[in-house]
Image 1 (tube, helix red, strand yellow):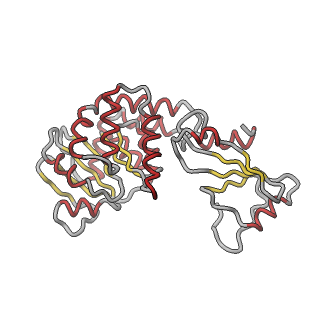
Image 2 (tube, helix red, strand yellow):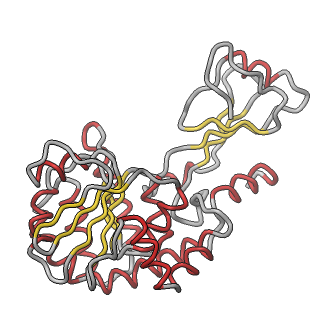
Image 3 (cartoon, one colour):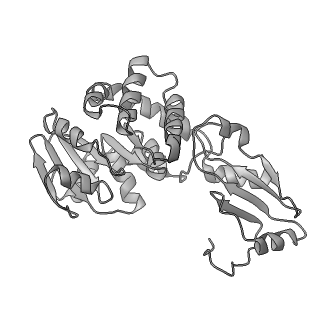
Length: 313
């Protein structure tokens, strides 16, 4: 990995150059790459999307207008016609080991929140952006059965939780109670502990791209808070994923998931949509298991990149 500074580090000696998210390599680097007897494999690693058009653009070449170089666009994705998703070789085995150890799961959660989780509660992790609809959902959970054990990693949504409870702010480790709802603010954790949190929860609210993918490897019910974009471009991406993710699912399940996800992303009544979503959770859990297994049967993103570098396909 190169620090982006001027003058830019010499990468001309490297056999493979990957630029992420259209970062545009400096001209002097391109000139040095072109001067090699055999130019390096040059890859632009693109953003993750479920939109159908990326399958047609994946691996497409783009010749440089002046230099004897050719860049290829490489798209992560959810189908065999894309580059796949990031996944460590032993990730699913570690997940299954922990999921097969209920006592270990209970011990892990107790270590995070400093006490034994509420008996019989639905354990929910909440990692999302600022969320104006959260207060309505917290009120629903406070009146729900079974109880809800809400675990909130320290981040942008904590201010919304504090506001709902009438607090100016909440710090890591603070715990709040409202009838059936217990809330704990968790510290920011490393990737391994965050994965174990996802594996230990009954439902995971995730955001952006990375936690969104990790939730799919967790094979648990999840809700995606997509990053908002200008001109509502994110809504197209959200619907593209929902269409691919729920393909073949029973119509009532697909409707419940779609309605709640859209409401969570600003298009609908979250409190009302939650009721049907909650009723569909047992069936949704089975769907998430199958989806994760389907993704796991394909090559991961690192394998896809290596195969492309070695074979060009």
